Amino acid sequence: MAFKGTIDAGRTERLTGAPQAGKRGVTPNSQGGYMMRLRGAWLLCTLLIGPPVLAATAAGPDSEQIIRYYRRKSNLPPAQKVTVANMKDSAIKGAKQGELQVGDPPNAKSVTFMVSGDGRYIVFGDVEDLTVDPSKAVMAKINLKGEPSRGPDAAKVTVVEFSDFQCPFCSRGYNTIEQQVLKEYGDKVKFYYKHYPLPFHPWAQLGAVATECAKQQKTDAFWTLYKGLFEQQKDITADNVKDKSHAILADSKIDQAKFDDCFDNKKTLDKVKADMAEGSSVGVTGTPSFVVNGRLLVGAQPFEAFKNVIDDELASAK
Image (cartoon, rainbow, N blue to C red):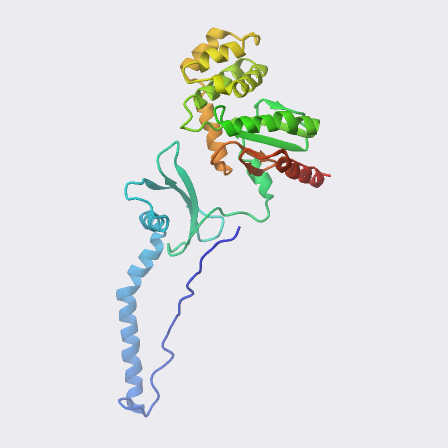
């Protein structure tokens, strides 16, 4: 990645010797005394000034200074909560790295940074290892173990969708995936669905909880409810999402009492939140978002956008 900004190289000055002999106020006989006085003054300054400078350097980056700087840089209001988290040694020797949490969980924005050991210079952004495939690094952040999927394990392309059952644009994304991507590419693609319910959609989180409750009993029930919630999106409300789920799952032969207990007590909410955290960690900020072999597509993209990335990945896999 490229970093914007400039670094002030500064200017180091040092005394290279006494003034030349013969100059006013300095004679050959007084030059030695002048040098002794100069060395004494230098030693005194070192004793008086040196320790505080060293102590400041040893203290390293100041979290409060980082927060003040970011507030001014981003023009944040005084009431906006900003904290420093996960400060640790950077992969770059001598530097520190951490995260700024802007706002309150679960909607806090995370801003990564790297700061020099003396706390003078800072870069906002991720530190990336040029020896690591960036796409593989993204996929490593997404936990797919035990998750329901469509398509064979041997598929060369993996598509992970982060979506919201109430989002109209997500409904368009659903149709593109189901009617075009999966039909066009068949066993060349493996598809996963992850939750990213937006807070201003009243029943989106409930829908996500319901699908996870269904999944606890049967994987097929998960996909049945996934399909039904999108296709009946316009008829669903926060008040009827449970009843609608019952109707959609009527032929799934799940234990309804067990499903109701799970839904009513939101027993799968932690799983939904974990999906959201994963999405945020790979750059998801809205829905729908699709991670295609580690490459992010944002929004209700047309089929051609998926085709461009998938074809490129298939060609690279040969």
